[in-house]
Structures are given as C-alpha cells and as structure tokens.
Image 1 (cartoon, rainbow, N blue to C red):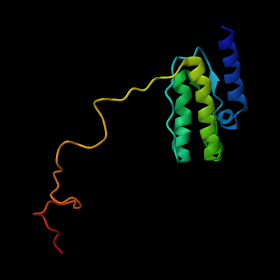
Image 2 (spheres, rainbow, N blue to C red; image 1 turned 180 degrees about the vertical axis):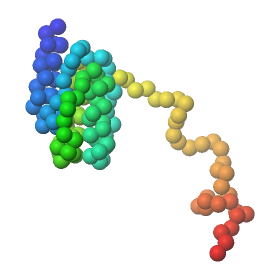
Image 3 (spheres, rainbow, N blue to C red; image 1 turned 90 degrees about the horizontal axis):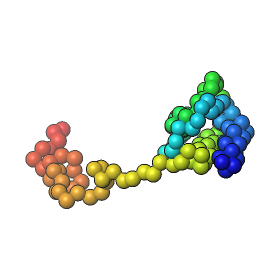
Image 4 (cartoon, rainbow, N blue to C red; image 1 turned 135 degrees about the vertical axis):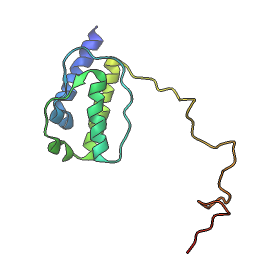
Length: 131
C-alpha cells in the first residue's frame, strides 16, 4: 500500500518535471489499466514521438492538448529519455508485459533451396536482360 503511494508520487513528479512529458500534459484520469509493453527504440524523432504518445494510452493515462511543433523541437535524446522514464514508472505501478517469442514467425535460415538459379542474381538463368 505504501509502496504504491510512493510510486504514484514518483510518476506524478515525472509527468510534471520531465520537459517532454510536460508538453504533452499526460494525466491520470482513473486507475492504471495494467501491464505495459516495453517500448521500441527509434532512431528518428517522428517515430520516437509516436512511441511516446502510445505508451500513456496503453496504461490508461491520457495526453492533454498540446502544440505538436513544440514537441518536435525537442531533441531526440530528450524524447527517448521521457519514454524511458515514463516506462520505468509505469512498469513498477502496472507491471510489464512479458513478450514471448512467436513460434509461428521465426527469422533465420530455411531448410529449402532458393528458387533463384544463381546465388547473386535476381533473375533465373533462362531469363536474360535484353538491351
């Protein structure tokens, strides 16, 4: 009980003090909805902002009205830091989804031979390119 109160206070402080989270004005309307998924990382600002906006929704928080331009002026590192800080607070309060590998979709080598005749060619042997 006391632990939950402490971590709710930490979350509240994070939402108010983080410059990126302050822009989107994340608020808790009701109870947190449960476990959150570990956010992906992104090398570009647009996708990082999308990830940031998805994370509160997954946990039952809502973003307020904000100026998107002010959000896009933030450095990518600041957006990533906000994602990390918010996730850390939410996983303590609501839990974290455990991602299990999908056995129906695995990457790797195949036991089957390639349909292409030559290893470095995009075309089978009997189809030559006309000039």
